[in-house]
Every structure is written in structure tokens, then in C-alpha cells.
Length: 91
Image (cartoon, rainbow, N blue to C red; front, top):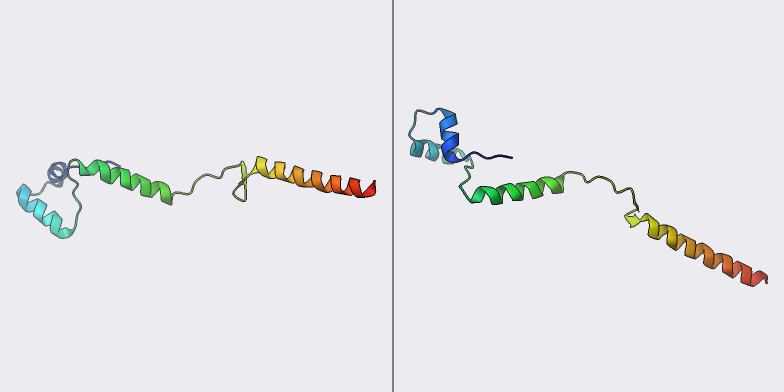
């Protein structure tokens, strides 16, 4: 996103009003005209909001929000414990 300064917007508008009159009119309309130094903060905040709104790509290494490798390891431990218990009772 690039934001133009008030002076640049005034020049592009081609208005016959003086700069101060034009600026007052734009403020009365509710148009946000960024000032130097504020623009950078505004841009970074807008980028944060855009990133929060955009859907994040799916992580293929997660199942139900859990790491796939840890789920497989846990499953292996559980199956091993059940197999050992079954083997111990048959013996």
C-alpha cells in the first residue's frame, strides 16, 4: 500500500481551491490524509490486520492441530503397550 501525502493528493486533485481550503474540505468529508511519520505506523498496522484476515496456508505436518510425527509416536507406544499386555497375559 502506498499513501500519498496531502500535498501530492492536492496536486493530483487539480482543485482550484487553495491548499488550506482544500485540506479543510477534505477533513470535513472525513478523508484521512496521513502525515509524515504517521504513515509508516499506519501501513504496518494495516499489514498486520490484512495478515490476520487472510487465511493461512494449511500445514501438512499437522493433524487436528497436532504434529503428525508425535501422533504416530504416541500411537506406536500405545499399540506396543497393548501388544505387551496381551503377550504377558498369554504367557
